[in-house]
Length: 140
Image 1 (tube, rainbow, N blue to C red):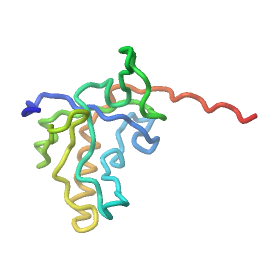
Image 2 (image 1 turned 45 degrees about the horizontal axis):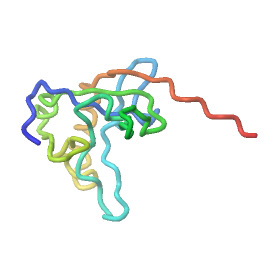
Image 3 (image 1 turned 90 degrees about the vertical axis):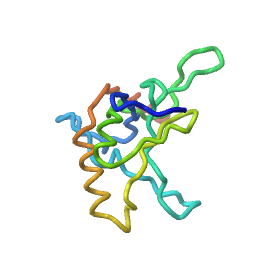
């Protein structure tokens, strides 16, 4: 897909309430946690982000309309490629549907470094947009 410049913004859907503090508007380290992949018995290799803010939580249907893909979605955070690289991480732009932040230390074997990077990313990332998630329908 090509090399991304340092001033390129990456967008990530905020899919968990624990990923940001609503009062302070601060992104939490959990937003940059690697997920455990049961089938591989290891952590995923990177953090999924998008180059287009709409694609991080929506998809386009056959008629060209945006449809909600991730539910719930509490908002969108953004972080620049240059900031990611300044922390010693890299951006993998070899996918059609997303971009990955890669190069994280292993969460178990290098726990202190991993937690430090999560914390630094959370301090640098910004809220791009917040949403009110849809209210749950009352049970009948």
